[in-house]
Each structure stands twice: as structure tokens, then as C-alpha cells.
Image 1: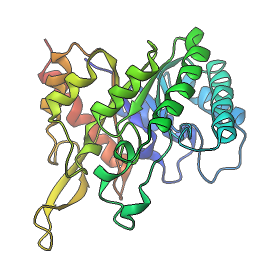
Image 2: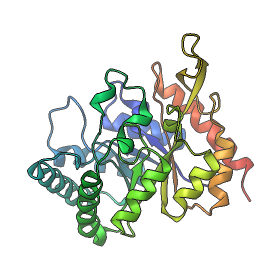
Image 3: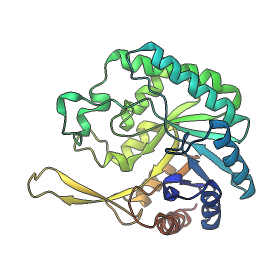
Image 4: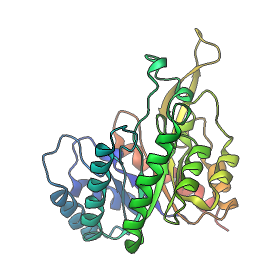
Length: 295
């Protein structure tokens, strides 16, 4: 059975790091995906990581993952990119000294096409669709440096498929991995994000196959699709529970098994309300699916 990771956004409603780790342990998660930095908290990176190390050990979490913010490699100023890479390398050094690293969910900086403002929801016109060849190479060069720097730690990096980024879809995330050409860089397929695109999206099974051996991690989330009466070819998407939306996660798991995926499944809760309750519901659902599909 795939280990299931709790994204920290289930517990970003004022919970302490201790409370986050306690919730994850109580509900049966194998670990937590934290953010690289916390918003609105006055703390040094070392102090933040010390707290994570203390409480993940106390609650016997097998996996400690980190996500955003990533690196801003989209800037045209090489000094900005240089600072971003150096800051990221510093974080990796501090983290590797404190917790066992497995997979890091990484991003290369947002890329918004100003020509289509304020229509920011036209996701297919941003990110990779708007990128220049120089931005592709900037991201690849920055990530090669990080890959080589982090190789002794054994950690792997996975580009989350996310709107507004170079790696917004399975095809573009895989393209970036191929440009970097390092064994420790792969993809975090968040297929739930691709539901927000109105074009350019590969079917689920095809997206999984595109990632192939470069699929290091997965994010599971779901949304209900509600047609818009004013624009027939568009829709509202309302975040939902894992088992309640338009995306069939049973089919997703079957697709993962079909390519021999042996990584981690991360689940998350991009919706308001009692997210700790949503975490209990969502892990119950996905563990039931995993049990049903055991060989």
C-alpha cells in the first residue's frame, strides 16, 4: 500500500507544529508535507526546522516532506535567480541536518501573461504557454545546480503540476525534467490542478504515462464541476472531498499501479471549513481505495 502523506494545508488554521504532527499521527498518515517557510511567523529557518524535527520524531513520522515556496528562476535578473538558488541550498543544508529527506515538492516561480489580465483563470495562456526559451533554460540551469548540490543527501525533487508555472501540466513538467537531465529531478503529478484548465490537458491515464519513471510523488485533491450559464464552454470548480468530485481517484491509483509507481501519495484540502475533519474523511476514503486495489 502506498504511504499517504498529509499536506500541511489540512492544519493551517492556527495549529502549532506539534498539533499538526499529532493530527497526522492520530489519523494514520505516514508523514507531513510542510511548507519551506511559514507565512506570517517570525522565525529563522533553523528554528522552524528544529520544531519540525522535534515533533516529527516525537510522533514517529516516517516521512518529512517540504513544498513551497520554491525558487524564482523566472526573473530576468540573474542576481535574483542567484539569491534564490543560494537561499534554497541553505535551506537544504539545514533540513538535511535535522530530518530524513525523501521527496521535496519544488516549483520554479510563477509566470503570468499580462496580455490576458484580468482573465487570470485562462490558465492555458499562462505558465508554459507564455514562457520564453531563456526562461526554460534559466529554470533548468538553476535546478541542475540544486540537483548536484543535493545529490549526497539522496533527496528527490518533484515539480508540482500547477497553473502559472513552467511545469503546469504533465507534458511540460516532463519536458523540464528532460532538460535538467538529473536522476533526482522528477514530477509531482497534481492532476486535480489540471481540472482548472479548459484546454491542453491530457487524460488522466495518459498524463501518468507521460510522467512515467519520472513520477516521484503525487498530490490528490478534487473539485466538483458546475457549468456556467453565461459561458457554456466554461465551468465553476468547487473544491470537494477526495471521493466526491469529478476526478476518480480509484482510476488514478489504478493508473499509478499500471506504470509501477512506488512513491508517495500526498492528499490535500484546498477548501474552507474544518480541515481536520476533512483530513479524517479523505484519508479514510483513500485508504479504502488502496485496500480495495491491493494485489
